[in-house]
Image (cartoon, rainbow, N blue to C red):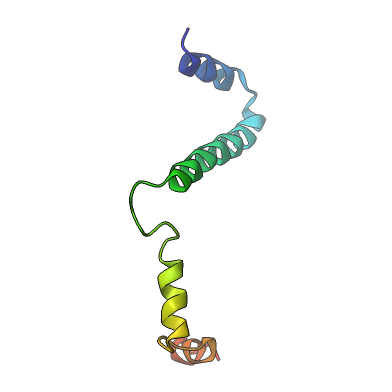
Length: 76
């Protein structure tokens, strides 16, 4: 039996009321694996989703304030 098959068997044996918990645990594991890929890098300079560039733009005075955004959205 492969590891994947063993995991499927474990999931198949779980009581119905434990499935939501198992899903959250497996999703967290997958997210951790995804973060590891990001940390290793793939040659892409956008390693932080554009945060560095956004902060640089804010430092240059580009963009709008939170207050302006709220005004534009009508939630001020």
